Length: 111
Image (cartoon, rainbow, N blue to C red; front, side):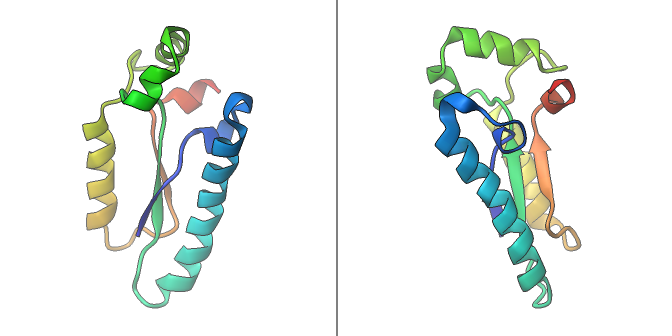
């Protein structure tokens, strides 16, 4: 099982408080289910994308995009294919369980 959360679950974001709270809850659910389902050989992990070049990110406006690029060591938005590659990694892994894989180009390093 691969859940989708967000780096906002770690940093918080007041303008999208409900979104942030929901994404933090997904981390707790991921950990609880990983414990419960692991004994049955089922892994439960989550992806936590940062700022990815999607309609959602682009709708936030140019100032937010510039901030995201400026706080990310790779100095760019992520690509949807990069999140997909991380999902494939988790899907193919046989001994990764209860992990939150951050896909943010290192942005959390600056938070």
